[in-house]
Length: 395
Ligand code: NZQ
Ligand code: ZN
Figure 1 (cartoon, helix red, strand yellow):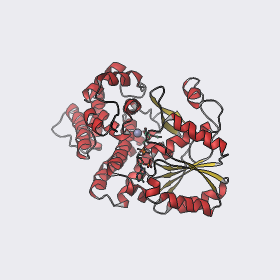
Figure 2 (figure 1 turned 120 degrees about the vertical axis):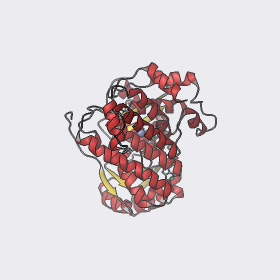
Figure 3 (figure 1 turned 30 degrees about the vertical axis):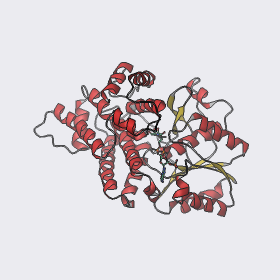
Figure 4 (figure 1 turned 90 degrees about the vertical axis):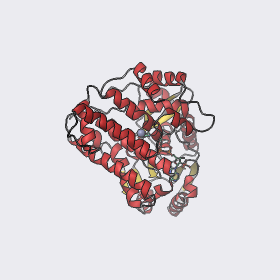
């Protein structure tokens, strides 16, 4: 294990009915003017908006609405939110949504208290925000674990970069699994696969020797796999949604990363694919993962063999270590197809909005490869050329 410091996570209110418990406890501690931030309107259709507004009114808060936060939030939207927060002298931001709403608000919270353009500050001057508008989160779609950390993934449409930024850590997070019942099944599956990806990207980081973080990680991965299948079979089962919601948080609350240098190379590739095509995050990851792992297999066989044995529960008998390792990656690829996620860029294309750039276009893939951040924690550091090769193998 590497050395580490652990500073904890936001206060978590988990379970059915958690919103009322959380807001009753938290609202008396915050200022009067609350920015209620949300996405394209799902919270109005499923009743969460009404519940939140009723509790805010009961606590005598003034609501300032910041709506229309899109999936894969843009930097322009962040700036819109920061301007509104300043103009309206907002005291507190309440983000109600999935990863996109939460991420946008983490950076709004920082930019609202910062004169300098935060993108320039972080990426040109390597200066990170230290002062934030206080933030709380109500999670309506699980998978990203965005409620647990201060990282935010923002798309800069001008520079064609989808980058991880440093933003605010929420004071508290409300996790009511019943809120996720209205998420369309394709998004629920893609979100849960994102959780599995976070686990894998941590597991295959360094060190690869046995350590407690990886053993906890194996348990979470088995749980995610079992519960994705259970969710598809029993969409109304809140118990299953509870498991997946907490898996999602566990993958990103730092616990699995203690003592590890994480990998996240698949994420870096997917983010750039997203910057060029606006594809769904979990779906993009599903396409990329098995091919990246086939490239990393050589030289890392024992960890991939362990993944096959401990996560996919494949028998070692009758197989060499190499065969077992390859079978584990195949089990992952088979699972992706079984749960209906796209397995190729061509399949991903079918899920994009009409008029979106073609993710099967080789020139586009070259630009994606050339702009992908190369992860130092990857089991073997890739090059832009190998990433381009990987992407063409995903066609
Ligand atoms: O916008 P609304 O109308 O709310 O609809 C959303 C959106 O269309 C809908 N939705 C959310 N909750 C719902 C619901 N529909 C019905 N009922 C509900 N209860 O779901 C759609 C997708 O929402 P979105 O927030 O975009 O999905 P997700 O949670 O997967 O977030 C994806 C974003 O998070 C970033 C991704 O890159 C992507 O931009 N990530 C953030 C991370 C982090 N901060 O730690 C880590 C991840 O690796 C990821 O990169
Ligand atoms: Zn992710």
